[in-house]
Image (cartoon, rainbow, N blue to C red):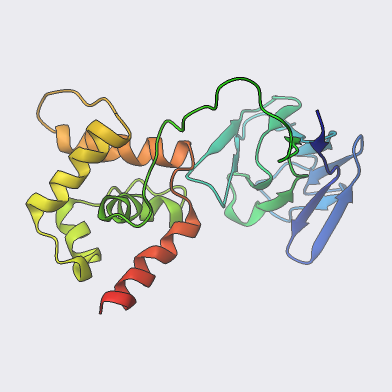
Amino acid sequence: MSVCKVSGILIQREEQVLELASGEHATFGRGPVDLVLPDPSVSRVAGRIDAVDDYWMISNFSRSATYVVDNPEGGGEFVKVPPGRVRAPIPFELARVRAPAEEAAFLVFAPEHVLLHPDAPGQGRETVTASQLDVTAKYFLILVALCEPRLRDPFSTVIPTVPEIIIRLAHLGLGRSAVNFHIDYLARVKLRVRTPERPGKSDRQRAALVSLALRHELVTADHLALLETRSHTLS
């Protein structure tokens, strides 16, 4: 069984770039450190980044501040690193490390994860994809529109309402009943999300669809182009 593998990470803040090979580390904080974060609310030695073979780890040396590591390219995924946490593994290939001070953020470009070679032979009967979505279908455009706020801002808590989706996809000429039908179809048939039968079901149903689609990368930032492409094609 063969794998594809790259090691080493890059740390960047504005014009400063640090390159770490596997086994090396870099400290960050107000200084004296390897990566300087010139903010009075940041500890002198606030933490450390460790480069490992195919991932990286972060240590929080602060006594009170919690750091947030998020995935700028993902669907809102993030990891909290509490005070005193040492060598917390980070799964994102591109990550943004945020201290409580907004100016104290920096990026970490990690190695590509270890993956099977695409030509590696399978075993046994072929596995069927659990969620087979047709990217040319109207229901998929509605799913992309639901996910759009989170795709553009991972920290957004906005879930578009049905009227907002109608406006966003005005070129499709969909009414409220049509949008509700497609959302229900996504929830019951395509993605099979569970929503309780009680008041507010539609809100939870939309939120559950967004959470599942982004968590499993069924919808990504690349799909946002479909919203504009279809609009220009049909206008």
